[in-house]
Amino acid sequence: MSESLRNRSAAIRQYLANVTPAINPVVAHRYSLVAARWEALRLLIDSGNGTARDDQRFSDLGGILRALTKQLGVPTCTDENRGADGIPGLTWPNGFLPGDPERILAADWREAARDW
Image (cartoon, rainbow, N blue to C red):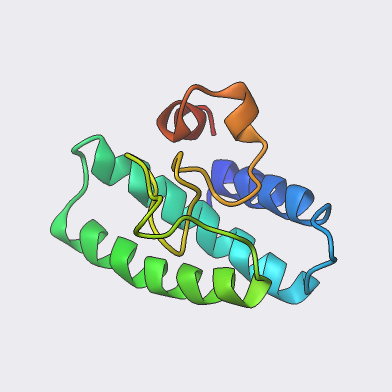
């Protein structure tokens, strides 16, 4: 895992540690590792630099991330309120992971992801 993915994973764990009620730290750790990789692939594909293999890895990681998101019990967007960037079961309508404080600093998830 690259340093940027390790740093992003740690940042995700940090904000998940502040979720109330408290969430399972083992699931949060797994979530943070998968989410960091998923976000990196999402940006790669969104910028037009992904390959067919990246598309498949993104899909596979999305399934794992969706299951972990459900285990954590954090709210996500739905088909009804997904917005332009939301992915039901994975993100908020603005495209950010649930509870991600980066949403306060960046105009959108793409800007935030480029900085990781």
